[in-house]
Image (cartoon, rainbow, N blue to C red):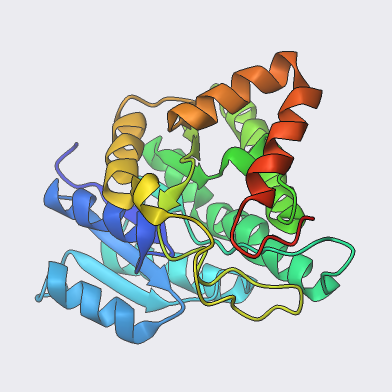
Length: 269
């Protein structure tokens, strides 16, 4: 890591975003962190850097273009540069498409896709200058559609297509683009997953003990950034799904259906 590295992380107060913030700070990076809860942000800032010199925080709803623009502008005012942008903020859902309120799908696209687009658009001039890294936090659902997560899968498919376009556009500029696919991770995203009406479900439907920890995911993400990898795919199940889907997609469809149908209170019958 160079003498001064500025890392911008959205959705930084929990899960993978929090773990990335902690690990980058331990490596000596300067951090610009945003999330929707200002109290959580201030608490994290105090935990990492009581002086406030190396950690800048701002309350942001990434679904709102103007808030993303202001956040990036304030980051530049504070640090003067951006070297790494980690588009981590995200939400999920669990409901059948036939039953889900369309507002739920729109909210998923606004946060998971447009939030990444907004932040990247405003950070792009500075990333071009630093020949920095853009990271999109995708999912297994970004290459294999998951039942009861139609809106989530749509947002991640869109994210991956957009990031691939960015990578090719920037083959000559030196800007690095990483698509990270963590697999099932022990975070609170499933606890806050929206139901058909858009309300938080309040509990995870999976055994979190069997998932990869956010700290482990963050370690792999940081290594992939340092190596300037194009893709990161984590967990053996995710690798198996990716490769089998290339050769026996209909069989994989059946296995995915069975897997989701076994979840606690699954909407699939």
